Length: 260
Image (cartoon, rainbow, N blue to C red):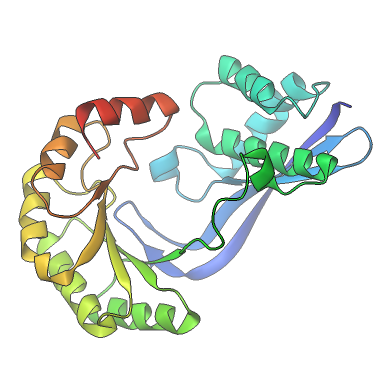
């Protein structure tokens, strides 16, 4: 049982205009990763490639890295040895998290098909029946964001993540307007995508205390763990790290700092 072929296929899905603190876009770009086992079984994975301003990877870079650097190193490997394969990639290619996620997903899909078990079995087993899914609403006027939140509720989402910007005063109005629109029918999260400073974050959170936010996600740059720890100790809701985490070791460091 061996991997005998790897493919990387860029694709793009049109979406409604969406903006966060990094950029705006009208398409969601990704790379379909296909890993073939020698009996013809195929595992599928998706490598995100839609925001190079954040991830530092593009559809072109993801595809070429998989084809020129990953494939030659994993062809011939036993697909059941997922950790070994990923360690080979780690040893030869630093970071490139989008490339690695696509390969990792494809390997899990492939092994699940080979063993005829769902992927959750590979990950340790069934834990819950349902997982609440959050829908994001991008940066726009407060009124448009409120309407977008109502549209999301109609679809059936009960958790909404509001994107923040570098205009904190307007963000406060956006948050209050969205909360007023949805009432108690949704849990609201806030994600400024590292666009704020520590002091600005604490000020904004004081202003929106009455909006009953579920959590705040990564308001300041990922490198500033002391700032994250200060924010965590200064606000009344959970603080979530995102841009601060690229590796399992980063999670350990965040815990040591008390940064989330």
